[in-house]
Image 1 (cartoon, helix red, strand yellow):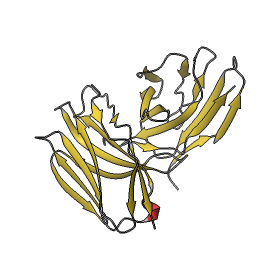
Image 2 (image 1 turned 60 degrees about the vertical axis):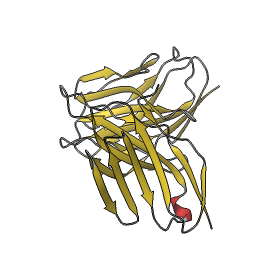
Image 3 (image 1 turned 180 degrees about the vertical axis):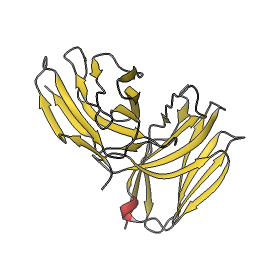
Length: 112
Length: 114
């Protein structure tokens, strides 16, 4: 089955710790995206990558970092510099010259 | 003013009702319009995708785009309790320099009660 997987589904961390969220796709898509979703605020773009070894900051990149070493994988690290990290994180991908994005199931991160 | 406005609801309807969900936008360059359905604590799922103006139908769902009014709609006929979810509109302009960024509405919460 082709799709996007995110792990873990739930993640709990103490303040001051970095944490890495996993995103893998087997759709052979070139572009991948990370979004953050907070209640009542819709989706906000954190980082995106059009091809391997290249990525760009989105609207709210501060306190986050990414890497894109393989086409299938786009991990997101939430650093201790992110002031308000508790949120629902969504990974998406796009390919085939099309515009629509396909989403993974999300990771809910809680930092206390 | 946000680029895409969407009433957050909640919208509560009885089973079998026709549901109308709407978004307005300000950027006349938007050409591609999408509707996503998101169940609680899940990732958004692509429902409908349209290009430019016009209607598109898929089963009980109809997407409408009126570019002259900068207004898009999603109609759900014979609504079911399983349609209860948050519906997100999304849109973007023609490809420009290899950069593709979807602009999302905040989502409308729909509840269909038996």
